[in-house]
Length: 264
Length: 324
Image (cartoon, rainbow over all chains, first blue to last red; front, side, top):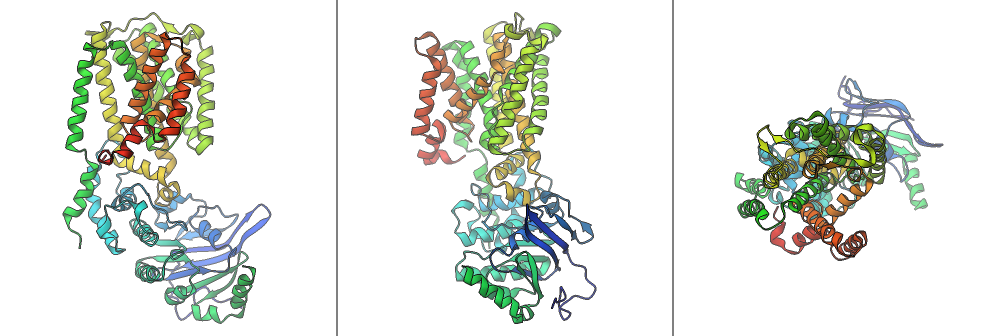
């Protein structure tokens, strides 16, 4: 039983996926890490990539962000074929990502972290002859983004001094600075306390209104709450795709998770 | 909600502090008066190496890239400037420009090949390419091999100011030194410098924000090579001498030593480090002590006692200094 990529009751009629992959495969030597994966990420929807440990979620994620090069398959960003592009290039086209280990510029203030992201689209990044004061016109926008993730009151603090949950929030703010068409989040809730999880899940749901969002996530409760489309991976292949209700009813999904727990 | 003043303070912390400006002006004043008490040639030598170390620090301290081949730019520019003065007999300012241009060109070539690699591989590529350049200098006829280029006059700056006089030369070198340090400071504290710092702190993140990080590294590499070349050109002008010593890998090692001793990632660090190393070398040259042994011992002590380098450690221990 292979379900339609987007369940009929949800699929926006005739809409193209913002990001789609067909036949995505990746092997490392003889090991087939990802095999023939099809994924569509639609504007305004949250697509969750789940699966037991070692299912190939991170590999798929890194293929989609081009941090890994696929061995076979095709990745389209809207009408553009991005299969052979480098990660910086697709970032400039509007594909933003976060990292599993939170990636901030530790020695910089929060507002500067966001300014780093704002600089490039504004053409400031290569100006080595101008003072930093020339960045001041980016600051209102940076503050706005920090405000959106609830960090405005600590804008001058060093990023390295933030708590774990706040670093992740800062990462989201930095990512949003790119005005992404597609946002890919790698385990955005991992290692967070319950309170932070709720705030972050709310934030993700809010952010996804303006872009296509794909996240790798272990927290099944959150996936059930905010995920629109779910893809379940197992051993590098798609086990099933569909809405949470459809996926969770699938006996193979239950089995995959139970099996994984036994392995642990 | 946040008000305008709140983020202005963030911008302010990036600007220079009034006390700092006074300090810088005072130091420039000292620099102007110093030749009254200290032998100007020693001071000029100090400035050449301080500039060399500052150029190196631009790459290591702010770009996070450890080059093991900076002697190629320093010595290469020295050769070109010496050749331009001796054979082409052009004005010293053009001779220096030619030297810096050569260093920039060489920096572009070596940089293009090196920035594709990271960490130790980056250092190895720069070492290998600078050694290739060393052997080129050893064989090429215009460098005169083991003899080096010597016996040329410094010429007249802009065709007017005679640089034969060491006091005149001193003020010229001092002006170039201060201007270069200002330029390096400006680059570090520019939007470009901020991206460079971001790349150093988290390269993957910078890539994911759309930065082609190799271009930024290459930019920093070429700029660093250019300033290293200026230091080499000034040294050739000062000693009227360009030899294989300046392109040898020992020189690449020496600039690393100076920079690490003084402390990376601050403007003052490499200057202090270069000052210490050059002064030690000068004093030890006439004493019975073996120079390399003493320098090596100094380095070991520094690594054990203050890993951040002299300036780095001071800044760490005196919190007031931490305001950049």
